[in-house]
Image (cartoon, rainbow, N blue to C red; front, side, top):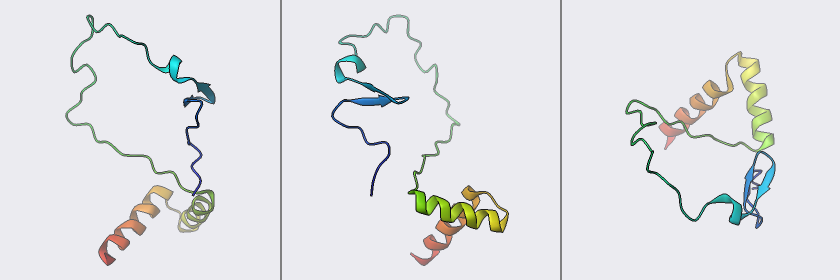
Length: 86
């Protein structure tokens, strides 16, 4: 299985540019003016991204189009059916 987001030995990838490890982090950060919990939202819901191989994506996109539903709804339905089997 190939991963299009694989990080090679050059370091992190950021918007198509390679960032060396020496550029990615400072030795020390100043948090004196930081605000604790500024971005914390207790009601936030995390939805993790799912990266599909191109053949699977093409198949599901065509099937969703035929059924006139969103790919997300189709994938959720397929996974729920599989959950019942398990």
